[in-house]
Image (cartoon, rainbow, N blue to C red; front, side, top):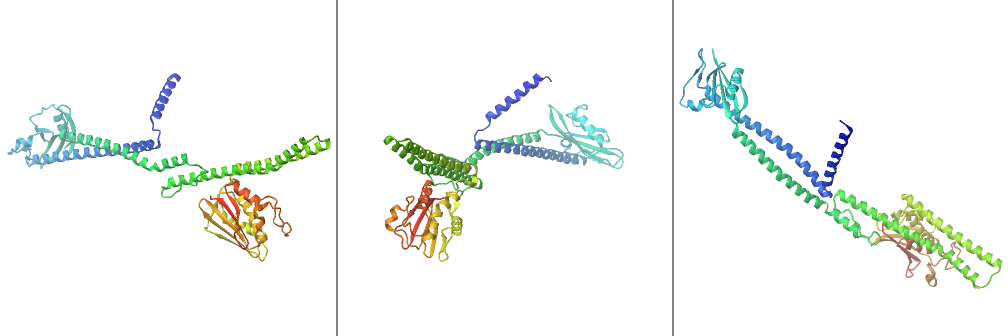
Length: 473
């Protein structure tokens, strides 16, 4: 075979494959229905073939039984007790002789009047009689009609005889053809019902998937607290819903992280940028000496370098979090973090700490490191100013996790409440405690960057109570 011929055949096969591929269903429901229809077709074909083969054998066995019964009836009119085979005349001789051949050994004695000696039926009967045993065969004669012949040997003392009976198989074949046609019609009806029911069943089974698709299309990953959930769903759809919920949580936390990064950049860059603007306004206010100009330039350069360092630090941290999923923002169990932070604090001997949780697992939608940075200043202040006890309680509220840090210390002076969360402010700088007044402002800023809040309850007495609200995980 030449290369050109092989190339043409390959192109033809490829064209046929493309046609079948174009005709294949595009939807999952159509493909599943086609698979079910194909499997049902194969099964129906096998069952139909097996059924019709079994019915054909059953009808043939029925015909053989009929032939044997007729041969046994004819055998009662044959006498083999003497040295010669004799055929006895009976009242119903014509009925018994119809389609019957009688042989003495291999020599024919009688044959049906409607056949000739050289007809296919007579030749087949001769062959059966020569075998001198029970045997059957099928011959096509009289317009290609099937005729069944069976031999029945009769043993005597001195002579043997054989009776060969014939039966037209046309009625049996007609019954077999009717059964075949009926089974094909039933197969077609069953395949049609299978296809329709499969499409309806698959469509009903995929209805939750369409609902989830519509929900995913119209739902905001950040603005909505709704989730797909796994309740009242099959195992496969429950796993899909859980995966989509996890994906939405990741999207929310990544967007929250971007908001946090933007907030931290704007907050950290505000101070050096203000210094640059102030130095430029001061330098342009009136003519300056060379020494004053160099001093202003040094301040501006220092502020610019500080801005560059802030950008490098925050952006490198964000890049590392993006490359390492284990450190990226996510969900965190609050209770273990609280226990760990309280154990790390240098708590005075007279101060007792306790953690109360409203549920065994309380997940907040922030990274563990960020949660520690938010809670550490609050816990450190509570332990520092408490007289004898610090109580931390955490519970779930709609859409958020609330953490209350309560101590029995002197509390915050009423005159200082308005300045409590301003950077660098302290109620009493000479109280003997370390601190620069940056912990509470930092905690509030970080909490707000992820959609949370840190607040102080001025009505709580005695002591102080700070509340942290964070998005639920």
